[in-house]
Picture 1: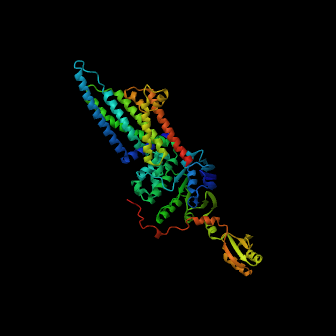
Picture 2: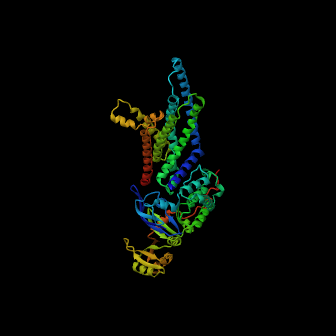
Picture 3: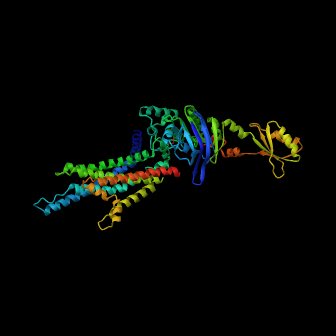
Length: 324
Length: 263
């Protein structure tokens, strides 16, 4: 449904997106995970034809975003990080305007608006001015706007940013409910969010794709020590032999530091071999002087991600939906 | 077809904004008040003048004093100056506000073209101005009611058309400037400065100036109003105003498009 190949976007000398490629299949919910400034928003803006790419191609439903922008725009519903809303319009008027510019035929317009308002649960504020709505409601109006024309693809930029925990859960349920009918890309910098909503995750950092997998596999790679760095003193050969014998270890390489007594131990995905490796070194008669994780590129990126959810206590108790 | 529908949707949205906020009400009030004020003052001096001239030529009935030339023409000329002040305030928000609110992203990712956005914005503002002019013309309508020799309608029509064309040019300039910034005050001030510049260019037009000066003076917005105010529908002036508008709209479109590339 969405094919991105070697997409690059430069702002002057700064490269925001650096040759990324990925695909999204029909009906799939793809999580776009990365720290702030990784290039998520830029990629989404290219996919929605808001920004032209510097090089590379992107196709949505078979249409090139550069050559056939109108065809792409007809098939994409987009919610930027701050939903674009007119504060002096009522919810209903705003959606009516959006339906018109999205080319919803006038005969279907009312039904489509009611349907979108129902799905996003904004029917009770339909006559309220958008400027008077709370952030949670505004986010939902933004989402209602995106699904109005029943687009094949939904692109949601940080749909839960700035919401309180209750609203976050509601928004995720809503997005999950939309999957299947729509192909969805959603971006987030919150790790647990993707495991709750997405079938597949693309992790980007500094404009590059660093990993692409299911949320479960990624979580394993995060927890499991894929590559260990073991430093020994004493009988290095015996230690190496012992390390090789540890169950779950796939390969042992000499990491060759100055003393020559460091090894990189690669373990099977999901297996935590640290304790066994330590015991094996000691049993082999060598001294274990260091044990740590090596090759941490992915983990380092995860460190920059928000790995926990905001807890209820952190949020101000004022969670009333309407501010006026 | 879809293009027209999209432009109409945008015009409708602009009108909702104008009338849902104080903008339209303030602009209409100030405009019609000033229109009325100019009309009363100019009509009063017309009465004094005609009485004096009647005394001077007791037997010939006096020279024929034209209501069109001496009243309506003057009022419309004055209103052109008022338009110079009001249009920057109407146009400064057109694109700048959409940028600041982030709603330009909504328009730019909807299946509408940049030209449709520009034209929707333009006709939204022009139609509000047409309403203002129509409301002002009610003052003049009273002349038909209360004068023994009513004014000719044709100079009134061409004068109103001239005023509309002039303000449409102002709006095109204002729309272009509004694409350049996200700050409304900057857009408004810059527009006013530019319009005043084009206004003053017309002053260069005097018979003693050289050909280069005459060419520059030709770009002045004001001299092209003169014959329209006198009831002469000169194609040259219409074409001038229309090309000025098209140039302004073209620049607005280019500016909007180029920002995508530079962003």
